[in-house]
Image (cartoon, rainbow, N blue to C red; front, side, top):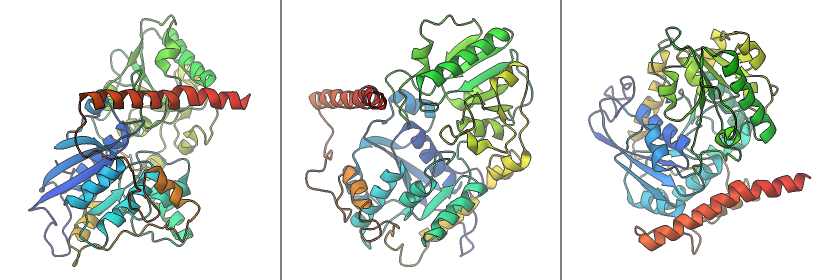
Length: 449
C-alpha cells in the first residue's frame, strides 16, 4: 500500500520511514468515512514503505455492513468493530506510527481528549483527521471539534484558506491545517460518449430531506428517461434497505419507486461509484461528492437548481462552478461546462497535479515522526476551561469524563461476544436504528403540525 507519488525527503535528506515498516490505524464510524480514512492513510504513506493498516469501526447507528465494506473496495490487514472506550484502551497498549480519525466532529473531539488521557506525555502516533467531502455547513463547529489533531486535512486550496481563517479567528493554532485533495479521485478520464449515452443521478441519503422533494427528483429522472428512450438512465443508490450510511436516509428512493411504472431504459444501481462513472456521460446530483469525482475525470456534470440554490441542500457550494442546471435544461440537451478556475481551487482538476496533492502532508508526517523526543501531548482548543458548557456533554456521549478518562460502567468489549450475545446485540442495534430512522422522524413531524 502506498501513495501515488514518491515521498519528499525528510530534514535529513533521506525519505522518512521509507526504509522501515509503518503501522497505521484508522477509526471510522460509517462506510463513507471508512473509505475516506483508509484511502487517506494509503495516500499519506510513502510508496517505498511497508505499511500495515488496521481498521477499527466505531460501533453505532451507521456501522457499515459487509456488503458496504466490500463496495468501498479498500483492503485492510485487520478490521474489527469496537466501542470508543475499547478503542482508547487498544491505543494505550498498541504502538502505531499514524492514526487517522475518520469520524463526525464530536467523535473526533471525544477521541482526542480520550487519547490525550490514555497517552499522557508518552510516545504516541501522528494523529490525522479531516472531512469526507464538501464542507458546506457547520464550518466553525466542525473545525473546532477537529482541532487538536496533528494534521487537519483540507481537500482543496479553498478549504485550506477557510480552515486557517476559522482557527486564527478564535486564536487557535492553525499550523495543523494541511492542503491535500479528496483521496478517492482518479479513474479513467472521460474521452467521449458511450453507447448507449448514459445519464446517472447520484442519490444522497439526506439531501433533500422530505418526501415531496425526493419524489419530485425521482419523477423528473423517470421523465427524462421517457423523453430520451435512446439513453440509459441510472439512479445510483448509496445503500440497500436496512443498511445505513453517514447520514440517515428516512425516505429511500427504492421505496418511493415501488409501484411506479418505470421505463425500460431506467434502472436502479448499486456498486462502486468509480465503476459507475466508467460508463457515465452525464452525472446529475443535488450536491453529492460524486460531482467532484466526475469533474476530476472531465465527465459532464450537472448540479441541480430545481429545488433552489440553498445552503440546506449544499448546492450553494457549486456557485461559480458552471455546473448549475435544471432538469428543464438537461431535458433539452444542455451539457454544463465547468469553470476551470473554480475546478482548480476545489482540488479536482485533472491537470496532472493530483499525483503530488499529498506530498506536503507526507513530508509533514515524516518530520513529526522524526521529531527528537517524540510528539508533545495532544492539545485540543476545547478544554474544560474554554468550553465548560459544551465539551463535557460531547465527552459524556462517548462515555468519557471531563478529563477524557472512561466513565465508570462505560461499555467495552473485552472478548468476542458469544452466539447469544451476538443475537441480542443485533436485535438491540436493530431496535435502536428503527427508533432513529422510523420513530424519531414521525415524532419530529408530529411536532411540526
